[in-house]
Length: 336
Image (cartoon, rainbow, N blue to C red; front, side, top):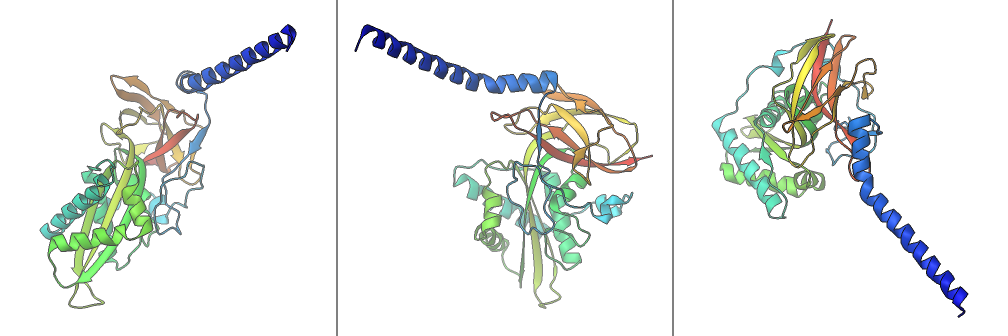
């Protein structure tokens, strides 16, 4: 090999090393650059995940990361109303409280036995789960979606006034003569773990919180049996509002918000008013930019009309791939 050929090979090798170095620097710098663009300049392309169940879906599966069309808003929610069923206190029998505790404990044992994190208890999720179980017993149906068309994500959005996150739900029933509560809790747990979709919900690694609610009553189809219906609400929490968000506001009202990050999550950067029919931000309203102050995301959001039911959603900062998510939160009724 001549001296000229050797120099050419050396130059080519040096050029390849330079290109490799540029690629490594680009890969390492991409996330902080995207964070700067998102936080400082507001430049980003959202990918929407509503957390809403499809009307024809029996099981709530881990959410996709692509934009999906939300289900129609049920007529029971679209008309202005404040029905008593949203506000009436609810409490189950002592036996059902023990059953709830037994199921909660067994669910966490299934997770910790597979090196998954324990789910934290959320009393409001438990209350919403209990309401759904009671509704299924009272109205003699067994489904994720009620006869009014309300699914688990919609129930959480109506009743949980502080949570921003994604919802998964398991339901099951048991009809028998009285049996010991620990045995009954084990039966529910075994049934869910032996069902692929329910098992997936329980063992989904990103879940952070759990609420369990059971209800019992006479089984009119198999007397003298008692029927118990149980609901698990599993949530992947992205943020909590420090104080409950009001159920109703007047058009033009400005909400002052202070959000706490969910477990392992960064603080959200923006909060928006969402049209539930299209799952898009209301364009004539200004997004509420959130500022990190002392570990809280603080800001204000002006809610606009026309009158109707709207959702509140938060924008999370971009991940390492450049995507960021729009996470659903409580519903708000806007009045004239």
